[in-house]
Length: 286
Image (cartoon, rainbow, N blue to C red):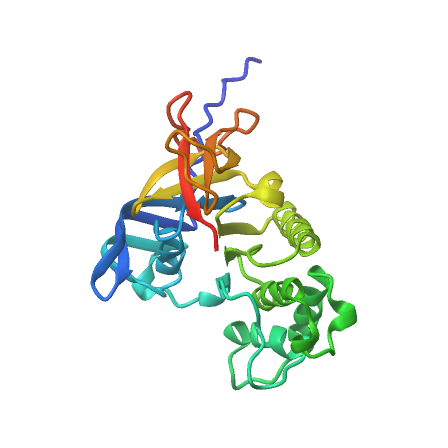
């Protein structure tokens, strides 16, 4: 008996986030122009660029925190305007601390991240409390759960913000400068936490000036320059330079050069850029 060969159709992945010709900005003024961008389940995407390039505007447009002036933004296959399941996106903002005028414990702050999923009217259930405890454990702060956030270091407070986002059990974790302004030890813990989340299947989209400790978990890099996406493909290596002559910035600036990392392959076939291409991003030191 001879079996007929089976023709398998290629699987077409549907993006969980899709931008098509999207111009995004504030007060009817575009900051990011004509952006095409897709995020797929399991991605760990780093958005790189200098101050004012538009990288934070990209994620704020996805989250509905900036105006989509032209083009389309879709979330999980739905137009953003009709999307309602915002608990599926966890957001860690750029602010470095969670200290406010009202004293709050780590558990209280993290619990607030559960509200988007459970709503305000219903009391916390055992599954809600379990999710909150798991989020705190993920960022290694179980021993500080009852402490005031005001007693934590800046790096620990960043971990509280990540736990708050994780408490809602999101499908996508969006982070804006997660390692900015924290010490070396805290950056290492943050990198290990995010690497574990990516290994567990969480989709991660993060904005950063430099990859540093986060480089090993990144599956794809997007570079934003002057309000436009100039690169979207395999992870990039970065080299930082400071000082020097021949037109280089002085001691008050850092130039980061990015080039394709040939050890990584883009899982979704994004264009890797022309061979030998480099992107130089100047970031003023503060």
